[in-house]
Amino acid sequence: MMRLPAFRYHAPTQLSEAAAILANEGPDAMLLAGGTDLLPNMKRGQQTPATLVALGKIESLRKSTNGTGLVLGAGLTLTELVGNPSLRKMYPGLWQAASVVATPLLRNTATIGGNICLDTRCTYYNQNEDWRKAINYCLKKDGETCWVATSSKTCRAVSSTDTAPALIALGARVRLVSASGERVVDMQDLYQDDGADYMQRRADEILAEVILDPMQDWRSTYWKLRRRGSIDFPILSVAAAARTDAGGTIRQARIVLGAVSSEPLLSAEASKFLHGKKLTDEVIEETGRILAKLAKPRGNTDLTPIWRKKMVPSFVSHALRELRGDDVSELRKRIAHQARN
Ligand SMILES: Cc1cc2nc3c(=O)[nH]c(=O)nc-3n(C[C@H](O)[C@H](O)[C@H](O)COP(=O)(O)OP(=O)(O)OC[C@H]3O[C@@H](n4cnc5c(N)ncnc54)[C@H](O)[C@@H]3O)c2cc1C
Ligand code: SF4
Image 1 (tube, helix red, strand yellow):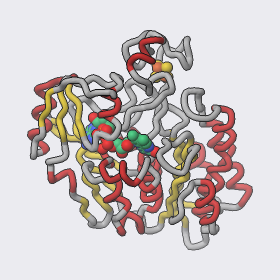
Image 2 (cartoon, protein in one colour; image 1 turned 180 degrees about the horizontal axis):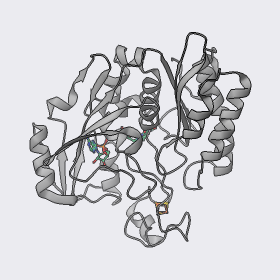
Image 3 (tube, rainbow, N blue to C red; image 1 turned 90 degrees about the vertical axis):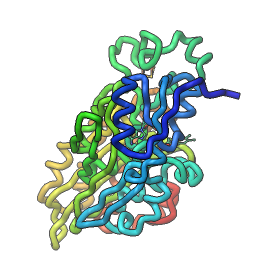
Image 4 (spheres, rainbow, N blue to C red; image 1 turned 120 degrees about the horizontal axis):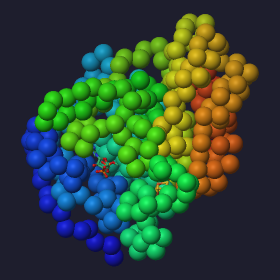
């Protein structure tokens, strides 16, 4: 049995208190939300915080407000998100993404904040201490070499969060709070292409809430590729959102690939290409080609990188056909193992 190492534990009831503890403890402290990723990582020695600051008792992180858009407290569980009718109606892409994370049991505990800040993943890293020691560890933690790309000076571990691509496609922002103040950051600027240092969030900042603007004329969707119908992390995902006029011409579109890089990839080229076009079969096919060029899957997660890259145009096609209004429910059931949309 793998045991947790010793650590100091704080469970503040106020956000300001949590921010003050983080500031005092320095970078050896980590935030604990649902713990569904962090605690197993600590057992395997991947993450070794001296102090945990638990967020579960901070009521303000567990609120959602529904004004013109939607503001989601970072401490809301994924089950609570999936059960939120406004979210399902206004932001179906986010609803779909949240509803395919892990399993129902894990979603009961896992939070949206933890999902956004989820550690990157790699076959050489998501192993126990003895396994990693036997290969002399790796660049991401305790070692000097990246075993996926031995000449690389940067870790290529994979961004594996389901909700981040969906939130980026929806143009969401997050509020980050620290003892020295707060700032609002676009989700698309929150990540960086480094599997070891994958977020722009500072160690003393708490992700307090997710801000979604009203999106009346938008449609959104999320498609996830994984080996099994539950539990598995994505090995490719496509999040798409588009605003069309009454005649079906696209006025704005955002397509994001997940799980094929160390950060979610928003395609500026696809947004530009789709502007002013209708979603014809030809346009959908060309968009798939644009996204496939962007995807750089590596051999450090399930199934081969070549096959995962080949799947990009198909998944883009499923997503855009759904935005067009095609009935893809059977396809979604078969491919995404998701019965409802
Ligand atoms: C078997 C299994 C299957 C899984 N499958 C999936 C999957 O398919 N898709 C997927 O996306 N995830 C998956 N996960 C990972 C995980 O369960 C989810 O990503 C979950 O949403 C993480 O949330 P949490 O609240 O448990 O985060 P925690 O484990 O508590 O924290 C995760 C990280 O986020 C940081 N953090 C948490 N809250 C905040 C905050 N408010 N501000 C700043 N930093 C914060 C923590 O310090 C930590 O670094 C799986 C996990 C398991 C064990
Ligand atoms: S990509 Fe390289 S450095 Fe990063 S976790 Fe994998 S082996 Fe380690």
